[in-house]
Length: 173
Image (cartoon, rainbow, N blue to C red; front, side, top):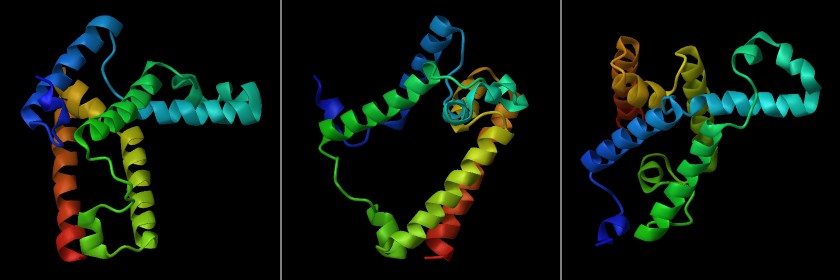
């Protein structure tokens, strides 16, 4: 009965339906949509508050996005714990730093990987703050609410992801 828990990859349809049901329950229980990119802004503010004191709260950005550890931070922690539990259950947890696909395309050096990961993280974080939401916020919660901006954003990040993957693994490799 629990064999499906040990599969390395689940059906994307089952996962999509599960995320949809989770979104409904989250909205029903908390009255808020699922999203996690604001967690990083709040955490940065909380760290800055520890270092610089209460004057951080007077900054215009942190008046809008208050530094705090809230339910979204717990969601991020839950994502990490859930991913680790899934990898453990499926036997797919391995102590490798470089995915096989990356190593085949670019080699095993950590320098290029670190630069690309850093640039990707900066672009993703900047885009999420600029768009007032991350991929999960727009792609899951925003499209669930039939927000036109979220549909445009979701189409954009899927198209952008396809183009960047093609550039990285077909043109540059």
